Image (tube, rainbow, N blue to C red; front, side):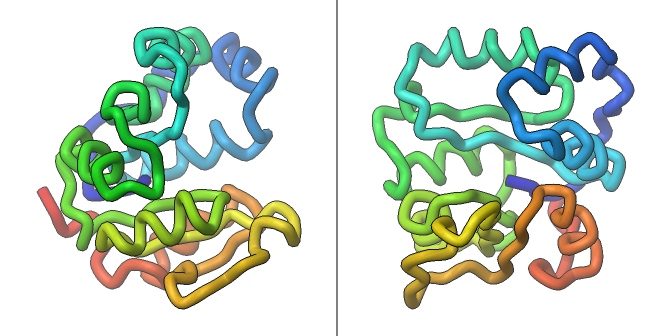
Length: 168
């Protein structure tokens, strides 16, 4: 969930951490997060993970992804799952961002795109295959990409957001 500017550096992610993330993440995840950070965008995670939140935060530290994000909110911490606006509101508060200046990126129409849209955010659907784009409706995404690697250019070109990084 990219938002406004950050002062944090992406240089903290070691090659060892990159190899640990490749065990379970998509190959474009680390490079995309690094590009977003380099561009000065704040990045947060909003997840329906119902596992112990402490374990999820530890997983982020273990993989090194914690150095590429500003916040992470899990449904287990909030007590609500996407598409509930309560989880999105908690994620926005954790990131220190407003819905109007935030783009939510997700791969599920109902939980991610519809939920974030109804919470007031712009949305980008990551449709890695045709099933992800199935079921488009009135609350459809503002943009569709097939790989996270497309996201930095989309955001920085202003295709989804009219003002990137306007919020301090």
